[in-house]
Length: 431
Image (tube, rainbow, N blue to C red; front, side, top):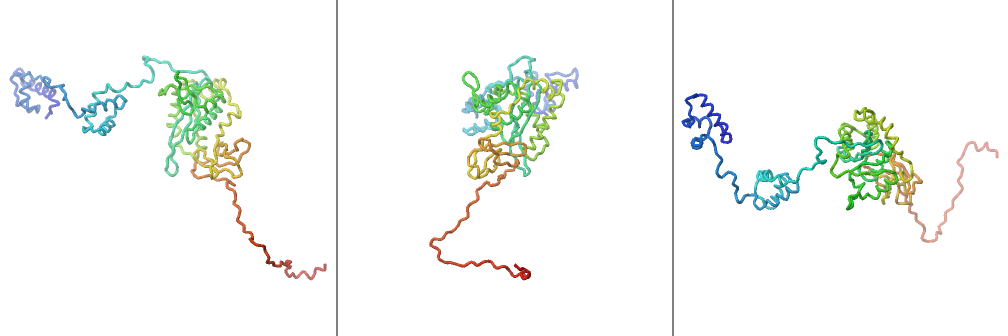
C-alpha cells in the first residue's frame, strides 16, 4: 500500500496498468474508483475529487500561507544576529534561544536556518577569482626561507600527555628542510631554532612567516608591521629581512605548511625517543634523508641544488658575541637555588653570588654560565624527567652549634704522658 506522499506516482502507475489491461475499452471518465483505491491506497473521496479534474491534482488554495504567529515569533532577532555572525550550527542557536525563553524544538530551528541562509556571511575565498588558471609564486636561489611552528602531543612512559613544539624552516627555492623540537614555542626557542637552521642552510635575504606574536605586535594605520622589539634586534644582529603573510592565507607560505603536515604524517608516526636531544638527533637524520631524495619539481636533489645554487647567495652565520648570546638565554635563580629551563629545574652552586645566569643546551649536556659568560658554573645531563636536578655544593653547609662557658673555668685535671705498652724486645734496646 502506498502512502499519500507517493500518490502522484502510484496513481499514474495504477492508471497505466489499468489501461494496459482493458485496452481500447479503457475510459478515464468511467474508471473504477474501488479498484483504483485498492491499487493505490488513496481514499475514495480524494479519488472522486481527482476524477473531477481528470486525475490532475491542483495545489491547495492555502498553500504558501504562513501563520501570523509561530513559535519563533519574538526570537527572530536573536537567531538573525547569530546567523549574521556566521553561526550556522543549529544546536548552538537552539541553546542560545532556550536561554532567552524559546519553547520550540530543534527541528523548528533547522527549518528557520534553512529558510534564512541568506543572512550568513559569504564564504571566504583564499585568493581573488582568477578564472581557471593561476601563476605560482617562485623565488630566486637564496632569496627566501619559510618558517612556522607545529605542535604535537607526547605520551610518556606513564601514559601522561604533554605538548611539544616543532620549529620548521624550508628553502622556498629548492625545498631544503630543517626541523627541531622544543618543549614550547617561546620567543627564545624561536631564536635558537632560527640560528640552528641558519647554521644548517645559511642566512637568506628574507624570511617568510605568519603573524606570530614573537615576530610582530600589530600594524600601524598605514598597514606597516610594528615589530616585536627583541625580534627586530635579532634581525639586525643576524642580517636578514622578514616578510609577513596575509592573515588567514596559508597558501602564501604553503611549503612550510606542507612540511609541518609532512612531519606529523611521516616523521612522528610510530616514533619513540628518550629525551629531547634524542628526538632532535632523529629529526636531523630524517631531514638529511629527505633532503637527499630526488624531487621532480626541481629536477634534482634538494641538498645538491641548495649547495650549488642557494648556498652561494645565502650568507654564512658568523659566530659573533651578539648572535651567540641568543643561544644562551638568561635565567633567574630561585630562592632554593634552581633555575627553570624547558620546563625542568636545575641546581646552581651556592658559591655563585649573583641572581642571573645564562643557560645553553648542547647535545645531551645543559651548561649553566655566569651572567658575563666568563665561567661555566655547572653542567647537567639533559633529560625530560620532571624531577629536580641538584648539583654539588648547591647549598652551604650549616655551621655546627658550639657552647662556650658562661663563667671562668677553675676546675683543673692533669694529663699524663702516654706510656708505651710492654714489649718483649725492650731488653735488647741497649740505648
